Image (cartoon, rainbow, N blue to C red; front, side, top):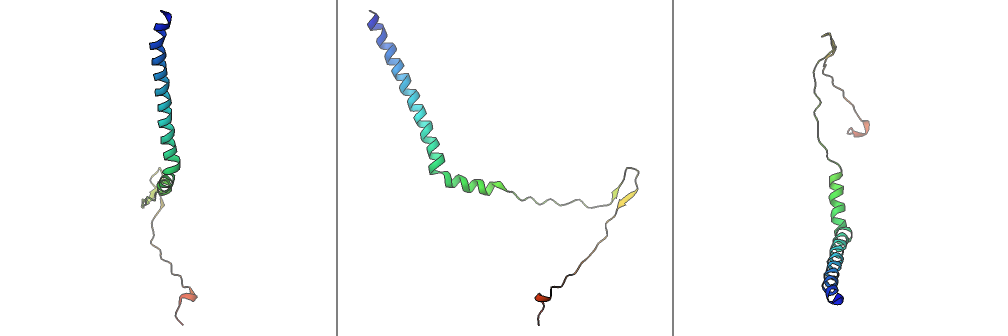
Length: 89
């Protein structure tokens, strides 16, 4: 009678092992797909995602100290540069 009781347990254990092996196989296949097949696609996405330029406008205005005295004021200034090589002859 001991032999008869072991058969369902062995079958269940074999099915469990098969399910675990299939689960690992699915995971390994997915990893292979991501690493080998889709590698170039993800590399391009990573390169595009690495830097993001966000323009930040600097606040301008008069700067005061804690006593209310003016430390800095804004004065418009202009500068002109001439490159001789860029002038017509």
